[in-house]
Length: 298
Length: 298
Image 1 (cartoon, helix red, strand yellow):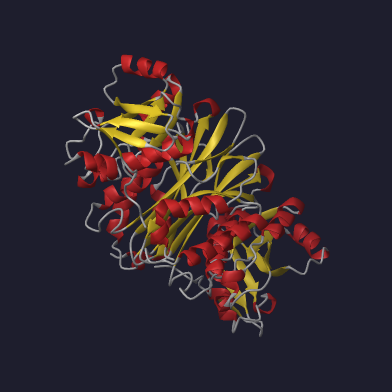
Image 2 (cartoon, helix red, strand yellow):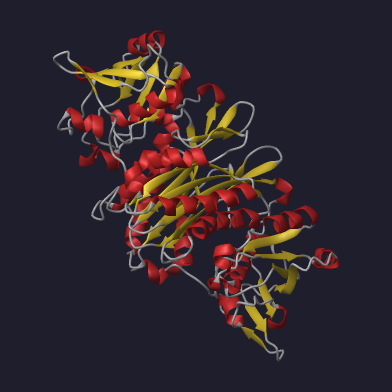
């Protein structure tokens, strides 16, 4: 049996079940970050993301943007848990014949973004590899009261997204601004019940919230904000790398947020009690069940 | 200019110079681990290591041993700083056509070693890649008083190694036992001035201590413990992946250690004031200067 039969998320679930952690681990594999005990008020957040040439970027993409993306993905994961990124390690696999200039530019992209987000690049590893491969692991912190996981959505919650969705492949995936400021605004001012960053497509990532919160959801075609690069609703639902925040708030908190008129956060639907069922109400007011799906590596 | 002209360590030095860190970072890039502030008594240690098929292992190597090695290298880095490994993240790049069984065995190798060393595997990332690539990042802790860096060697120190060196390519590189117990014994009972794990060959890693401590060294052919798999002294000096500890102690501390008759730690030479000069005294008592060298990825 090949891993492609199980799929990326089947494989992750299989790994998750085979791993045991001790009592210092608040949340192990299966969320945007791992969460471990730190001190009286805070947790540590840990996350890593590997990007590979021809899969996550093309060799002709600007090297500054490739380096930038490698770091931005992990920042987005820390933001999805409500935390602040602090330190990162960078493993770089690259062909022996790589021009020094290309590496310098990849590093420039990383260093510029790390400065902007006040993240310390504290170490790394270099290896030869036939395709450019970058793995960034990031350590962040979050106040206990501000931690948000995928598992806290409740029936009746309003579902929100930040920004616009779809068509990221046409450029945004290399230039997106990780929603750190927005996430901190949310966790400091609202009780966010569940949050995830949309890395694999709205339907798939909302599916993660549903599964881990043991709930369902209904979303409205009319309300889903499409990016001007998006060519269809399908791209928002099933294509990856938007790196927007997807989160749920109680009715009361949702009202509070809407009153703020931020212009960034838009309600797209609500959480239902129908376990794992995701349905979409289209423009003609017809409701149909959709199967969560999106980008999978296998 | 290609990166191969600069070499792996030239490239690391170049990166090190371009990175700035804030005051919470005790030691950034350039040691076995990064060291950052944690609490009153302890520091956090961070390290990552990427291994790639055809470079660090062969496709026909047992998958359990490949997984084991990926984790063991990082444990060795934490040990080299005197600390205790606690949490790790695993990024796995692999071809779509990988059999599930192979992944299960790689994970088995990791999980077994993680249990033995009481390390929590708290998360990771999966990606498709044309060659099996594993990047492990590890978070450890070390009491402030027990932290050892490469930079503390002093003129007159005795240089020690653990175990035997050379010939690791014939099997040990896949099966070595990270010297965590030994490192903790050392830092708890002795004042260790400098330490590193031998990952790139004795001469190269001793060279790192010399450069960072601004000292020189003389080592004695007679005293260098050769592994029975080693075919020549050259393999101990210039071949990588022994993953033994290389450390320096003052005369007084060295005497104390030798009295313990551990059988594991052997003196091989001493630190001199001749900056960066590494010399070898051969069996005929002839001294010659050797240029540190060993495995480099580029």
